[in-house]
Length: 357
Ligand code: M6R
Image 1 (tube, protein in one colour):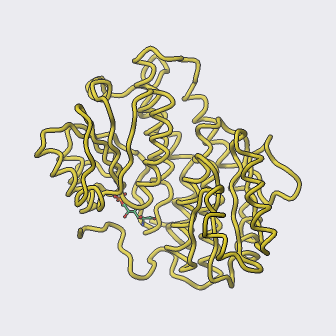
Image 2 (cartoon, protein in one colour):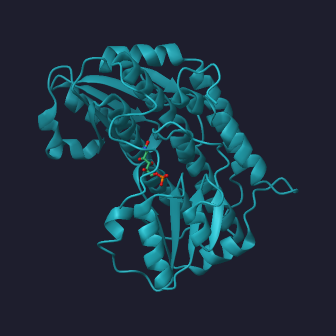
């Protein structure tokens, strides 16, 4: 039930801190450390390469899952769009393990890959929000998101929950391989949940940003480098899906190789700057588009902010910034859709679960 909320999407955005806290609680052992079924950790450790398969927002979570797993567990990861993988399978490693990320557990494109890889005899884990869903039943193992039902077509809390569970999978695997255990993920995820609430205190500002930048535009670009690039892809998908604004996410350094031709006077550019290592270079990319007339909206993180930044999220661990930086993007999309009189919870042409290939 959406209670006093005007839309499920807003309710689900607001439920994200709760979902993160629930995930910590569900994956915490008596000794206070995070834990995952040892059979799953053994399967991950036995693999020489992980293949993440997903669609849409879940694919975007997978791109970040790769960052978490490669940095904390040091296992190579490939991330594939399900509908491409099933028709154009890449050369596989000797001991692959498949990880399906799917909020609904019913996405036909992802299921088609699961059927294929099971036929080949490879192990599979499904990360899903829906216990007993098709992909959960048909995989060898399941990791649940515990995010509560997601009703709005635009996925929000499932995305941050997927990233939280992927970070836990990465941390527990890394720890069990004997890597640095100084990274206190329980503590860091707790900081994320609190930081989310701080962002929600600034909804009015995000509504103003949506009105200023997006109420009449035809198109918009999201740019970032590294982790921020992947979050930009998700920001662009959210905006397209519910406000029908043509939006694209780009790697900051790639714009000048063609896409910059699309920049006109007033074109909105939403730039993410949450990574210290690329803070100056992404700002350089913003300058390049501003010189062509773009209207920049820089979203940065406390500690990395500079004059003129439009929105600043609280500081969190650098690997986990997507869990916080996506919130302003979700809310900007939500308000943009409202300002444009779009049906937020049920955008045209879309269904919550895509059960056809
Ligand atoms: O249920 P799934 O996670 O498998 O769904 C995958 C996509 O269809 C889904 O994430 C879609 O992109 C969302 N509507 C995006 O908000």
